[in-house]
Figure 1: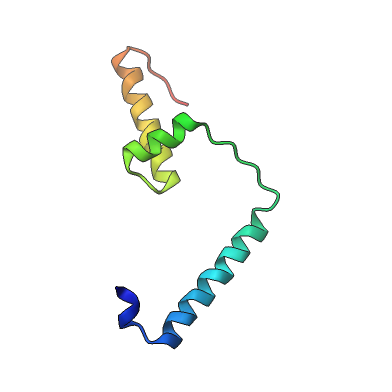
Figure 2 (figure 1 turned 30 degrees about the horizontal axis):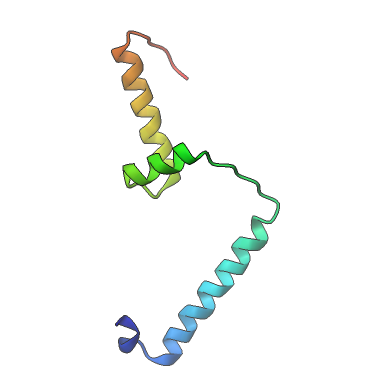
Length: 76
């Protein structure tokens, strides 16, 4: 396993950094409520895209392409 190759102090440093980032993330998003529809989560899994901005850009492109095919043109 990869842990065998890291010195204990370095491993602990990584654990500490990840824990601090996790706490910071929790603190920053405490008031954030985001309901993501299950359909969108499934599409994200199917598309194998982990960057939400890239996912939205790809979805917009897909919608624009479908609109052009249907003969509907315009900008959002």
